[in-house]
Image 1 (cartoon, helix red, strand yellow):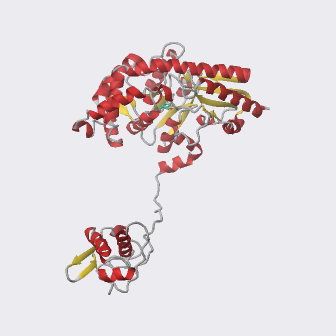
Image 2: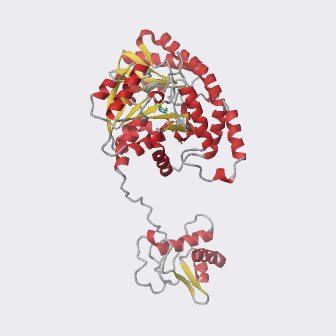
Image 3: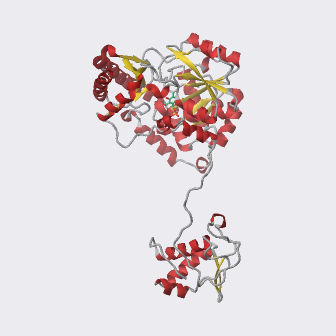
Length: 507
Ligand SMILES: Cc1ncc(COP(=O)(O)O)c(C=O)c1O
């Protein structure tokens, strides 16, 4: 028997792998007798103990059977029979194993051609927009990054958060280490329900509040609960890709409804055939930043009543309103229980927390409970408990008060810098709330936006063209700039560079 060891790891593992491979690729057939351990040891120049160890392992795993006095045989039924390649384990028994060559050729590692679903293929087709599929930071951070969605690192209340997580972790009982209810731990559902009632005007009881892993999961859960294949969904244009991508992947027909300075244009909604679901960001339209006034909110609710459509209200950053008080949410005005409210800790704390919430209308509570149970059986318990302490202990609201001031400073720095370096060459929209604005470059064609981004990037400044958020690229170049993360001096420098590069592009 010719054995070629692969030279990797302990000798007995090499012998083990070599024989196992020969069995799986059919070189050693079921019932074949393995050569005596002493002979193998002599052949390959290892100690007999090494070979004994390897054979022992093969016996324990069921590849071979050893009978005292009569030798070691390849088992009739192999543990990995289903993955064997290159030979049949059902074929006739081989004669002597002594002349069977055990080669170094391995099991095939060619990946199988697995057919992917229509949803996976649709997502692949959306690949030009694939940068939206990951917002993780790249390895080479720019000097000034206007990336949307990155929190102000210095403002994150790390001390308090780690203390609360640590306390819950240390006190964890057996009950806390097993699965928690799919809708979320009762402590967090209560704390969120009280917070949402007092700060956002949401009308809810704790059992309507479902803890999610962020708005993204809420969108998928809403689709699971409400949508059948033929149903159509209205989304705003420009839009949040967190709505567009998962719904498009499901094959859902999207109806794009234009927005103006008051958000979604309800009259346009009424001119299309009925839709099952309307996805909106009324408190800070994403990405344009417009605020839907009360009159438009009431019109939207009436239109939804007429169509018998549900509404998904994404209230992702309205806590940060700088001019005037935060506006009461749509859900609080809803008299027919058709609004599903979604919020998230991503903007309030930091995105990697992956904690969000969905407030379901009472008649859909059970459906959402079942949908979460089969989606992921619920979110991480200890973090939920710590967040419950954070919210109930008033830390969230204290943190938001502080952060609102800091965000306002950064926003003012950005607006001042745009005024200083661009003057009338730029127009800013969406600055009243949230943590991003859009800067429109007057007289610069949309087609120039990618080149401006590249030129800025070469100088260490990251700016983000708005085209990705539109179904059709706008005629004017626009950039979505997040300002929660950079320092005010970085903002000033970043906008200076941006203005210089934009001037080049236009000329
Ligand atoms: C419009 C909108 N909704 C929701 C979110 C939050 O998403 P998630 O909770 O999945 O992080 C974001 C984040 O950037 C957003 O821009």
